[in-house]
Each structure stands twice: as C-alpha cells, then as structure tokens.
Image (tube, rainbow, N blue to C red):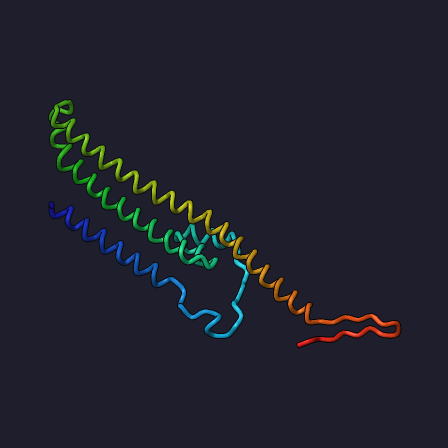
Length: 186
C-alpha cells in the first residue's frame, strides 16, 4: 500500500470512529419518565425549525424532534459518505496527476494512457457515488425531520388531549332544577 493511500485510510477510519462516537454521545440518557415518576414532556416542535437544523447538520432536526436513532443514522451516514468521497477525491487527484498526466501529455491515444484513464474514470465514479450518496442521505434527513416533527407534534397533541379527557372524566356536572353543581373526583 502506498504512503498516501495508507494515510488516507487512517484518516478515513479515524474520522469514521469520531463520527460514530459523536452519534452515540448525542443519544438521550437512559433516565426515562418511568424512572423519575414524572409524566413525559411533550413539547411541540417547529417543522421548519427541524428542517433548518437538518440543513445545517444532517440529523440535527431529527434529534430535535426526538427521533434520535434516525438522526444518528443520518449524521453518521452523511459524514461517512463525505469522508469516503474525500478519500476517493484524493485518490483520483493522485492517480490523475502522477500516473495519467505524464503518459497522456506525450501520447493520449496510447494503450497505456487509455488503461490508466480507465482507472482514473473508475476512481472518479467511486468519488461521485460517495458524494451523491451523501447528498441523498442529507435530502432524506431534511424530509424525515419535517415528517418526524409533524408526527412528534401529533403525538404531543394526542397525549395532551388524553390528559385533558382524563381530567374531564373526573369532573361531575349535575343540573338540578334550582342549582348547578360541579364536583371534582380525585
């Protein structure tokens, strides 16, 4: 393995391990509402705010909408594809500059130049795949953060409606001919 390829490989692996550690660190703590004996907080999340967060950093909007698993997936996948694209780009530049250009400047139609061009083209396609995959996951992150925040808001409103219905069920309302009484049952 060449020195540049080895450095690119180590750089890629370190970057990937840092991204995995970051995504694990952003997962919520294990303390839940059941452990603390409190009702869960259901706050509304702005769908546009979630999309803007995901536009800045893929997965941030999903995590904002309490979808930590898909947010971590989006973050790690996008960064992994971008790192792969960077490594492939460096490899593309190295092969193009060091192998193809010296041969192509003297005779671009030679079999050696065409063979090296095939390798350069293959590395170029790998780079394009990584970059387009990163864009695709980023776009998925935008759409998922919007949909996820709307689903989160629907669950929040449903939870609040159930809480209000439980309070109303505990009330007793009676109409009598000479008075109206309201009683609360606890």
